[in-house]
Picture 1 (cartoon, rainbow over the protein chains, first blue to last red):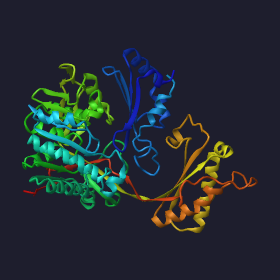
Picture 2 (picture 1 turned 135 degrees about the vertical axis):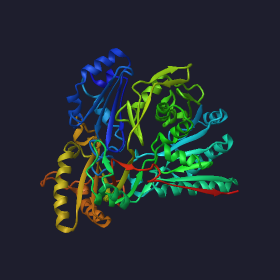
Picture 3 (picture 1 turned 180 degrees about the horizontal axis):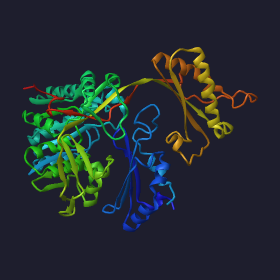
Picture 4 (picture 1 turned 120 degrees about the vertical axis):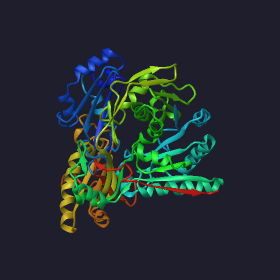
Length: 98
Length: 449
């Protein structure tokens, strides 16, 4: 199943010009457990083209949210950046198989 | 108890007028609104300009000044003019003076400037007073001196100094998003963890409620915690909408660094007081030994000219990446022979993978694609020269030497669209100050009467 079908919402956004943060909102504790256990950090890091050692991960049962933060794939607004607000990375994550 | 009225997430975004009027009627102690962020890209800091229309900003700022007059309390804006550079502050001061003159208002305006001279920052760098944050780019004194604008993010102390002038309106350059909200509760002795946490929840206005578009919320602070109350009709703040806001645009959802310390919300408890208000207690503030302020800087990264061509021929749509790669190689070689200076050519295929580039893993094309030719060069003139060399390729380049000459669709004449100078963010660092006001300048002006 794709993550986007399982989760209520997957979003991504700049966290300043040098970081990107991705939030996965789950409807309840059951879905949260499925997402939390089904998403290996190495696979997420590979999908986003980042080093797993610098990726931050937060599993937040109190909110049924799994959150990842990575150094931005390209510095925001630099010549090689394609997405000023970083919102499209969420689509990549939502299409991932869990 | 200190009540901070937050009209909306940023000046220019808009709010429900009835919600704002309700907030004014509830007797706030201050009205606080954000004026910008880095989120729209490096152009604004690079040029020291605002992203929003002047007329639209003026119309909305006039309404907030009317609310300030009705409430009889200070109105504070942080990060004025999108980037908070000195020129953007001057732009809003100018607008404010026009409003006061047109309305016959006497206004006392405190102006807090956050702009740093590149030389002073370069000296601080050489003196070891500048420290990189996680994932900061490599910098040097030369990179710093290359910046067209550098701002330091003011915290609560600098905003408090501006409030203490007794001004009606406080126009601040770059501040942290939270500082303009936390400043007064902290000055009046409210719980420090609550002041910063409530400020973070409130900084985007009604985003921490069930209806973002209504804009206005009230954040109430006391010795124990804070309460969020939406001002829009039928809008609710719930423990979930309030607690989830720490996720937003934060790389760490529990810790938030601010000048002089950090907020930790791991112990926060969210309680629904009724079906629309949420009270939060238990967040903590930890003062640090060093007083640091974050720096943002932008410098010129070249000049750009872009051209757009659309491709409808199925044979070319199917082979679009080969076509682009061939053009890039051939055209780059030709332009190197015929011009002098540094440039790059990039072709991005809208309708295939323009958004995610090499990370795209599900690309599929439809009946047509758009190809944006992006020329970046060391001068405006060279960017245009190379874009003109690219033009015939975008119009007629064949996939193989044997096929008849194709022609593609230019939607505009001329196809070349100059973007002028482009900028890049180049600082993700903090600067140590011996006194919070050391890097900031506060002045007071009186207009009208």
